[in-house]
Amino acid sequence: MRKTAIISVAAVLLLLVFALPSYSSPPEAKRILSLVDYIGGDYRNAVSGGKVINDGEYSEMMEFSSEVGGLFADMEKESGDSAGLGPDLAKLSGLINDKADPAEVEKLSTSIKSKIITAYNIVPHPPEPPSIANGEAFYNAQCSLCHGMTGAGDGPVASGLNPAPANFIDPEVSSVLSPFKVYNTMYYGIAGTGMPSFPKLSEEEKWDVA
Image (cartoon, rainbow, N blue to C red):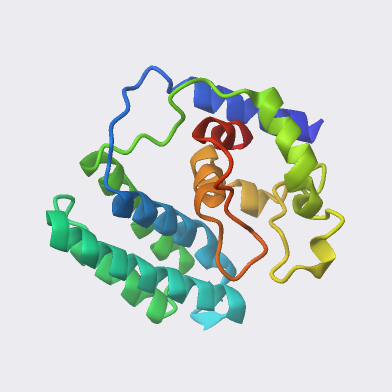
């Protein structure tokens, strides 16, 4: 029942935006957007009350922040900083280094994402309506091995993974999850975890799953 509700809500959210046009955008901008989105949603799992509560998660935040800095430097060298991201990205890095409050990191991440989407014409939805049936079939055959049939992170190989697979039915996880974030995770994977990228899937198939 809960799984059906999650699928239905995701479908409605996606279908509402298909009338919007699509544009090309720099690959660095897309990757920066993906990383900042991940930082904004997962930093809360790394820091609380000015202290690191999960060494692995905090290390991941530091790595992602460093990668963002490198990508931005490359993009700025090639095409400038039309979105005015430099100061915000520097501030985000500083907040992570200082173990700032998660709410502050999330707020700044949201602002950065908005600037990137606007400046680089990134459209965070599929060009055509996805096939929920195809996505569910792929999830059941592949994703469920780690994330479980209901999304609870309790698949048959989950116990051997560190960090553990995401529990999609945990309110704290689902509250920061979006089809665009799932798509990016499937596109890039997450280094240092059991989450691979899926280069053999077409763009349409990735969106079907997302």
